[in-house]
Length: 236
Image (cartoon, rainbow, N blue to C red; front, side, top):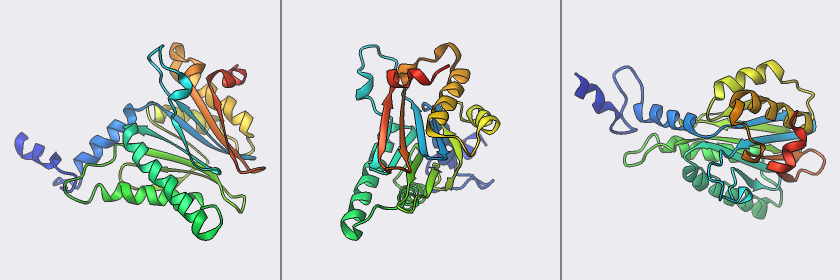
């Protein structure tokens, strides 16, 4: 019986008798092993803060990026196998640039996350491929000033959020966001809130050098980054 059950996890294209795709579930567990990120919709823009989980003191913190700039008005991060994320997000950068060249205007955030989600979904449907072991969080300000934060999962589903988290301790972080999030938060207030949540979750393991942030304001619609020491002033 054990061998019969185990046989259903040999391919991402095979459903188990109770309707589950086991390889996809394994990939979702990989996502929860990745370092956490928080995305927040703010009154004056959008924000992503990511834990880079730097463990090697010889690493240059600024050389280890956890947040990608997809276009000047869109930023993204991921949790899980970051080499998988790099492939998808570099493809997203190409899609965004092709849209600018073709239509002479910036691409909408949802169009980019939909492209990522479609590729993630295809990896659960065809033999010979494994699911992408990542969840992707994308935040941007569209040309009509619409602020968006999306999260796509291993299955290729994506949803829009006011605030969300991916990666390690994501359920605990979401609970704290539900308690503290307010729709009128400014970007600066959202940075303080996110870092204080990380401080509660990580406890003694909290170190400001582990974090980087990227935000896009509705004022200029251009992504800006903040690294470890630049974030120190936001920690209580």
